[in-house]
Image (cartoon, rainbow, N blue to C red; front, side):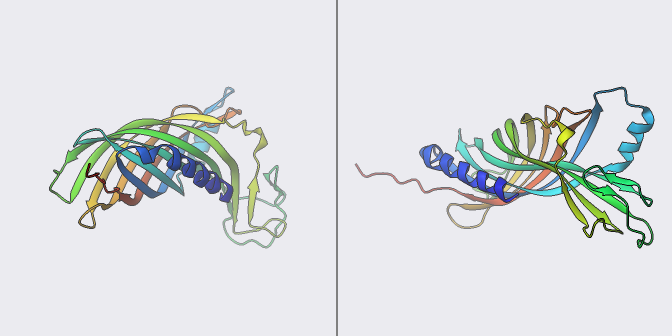
Length: 257
């Protein structure tokens, strides 16, 4: 996670210094609470019992992303947004009711804890973390130039590069080898290194001073177009994000020539 954010900051700094300062518009900085899940397909003839079982085990996973975009003004009502995002997608798979000597996971070992009481389970958090370059067309659908609040509709796409993938296994009701959390490499996953995404959503902007600073809230739907991996079980991710942040519009300095 720390390395992913470091990559994000370094590439964004290069982007800021060499491109966006030359274009008229505004900066958009946000954190992005994210809820994601997966449609799963199989590289073999999976039984209906297996598919139904995995559907019952899989559930939404929440995480945090971030974004730093530049909104280039096209006219009074529309903008072109581009920049960098850190996307943290995936899903959670819950396995329950382990018995003594059951295999927990090949990278963990077997169930050897006899002291647990009640139900025991493991949440396997599948984590795919991407550095993403979005391009979004944003058009105003409510409010006017004199109002402090405006609503925009966004639509566009993005390309993503995978910077980290693992499975974070969290044990509940018991421990294994003195630990409750394991980070699994998932070597057989055959993860995809790149993806392309469809993005759409809305943005509410509200002025918070007399000039150039705004806050905004932006709920969005993100649909990767390719599989996240190419193993026997393939994950086709989708996500809802709620970007919350602020907008800084640089002052336009006109020369008196």
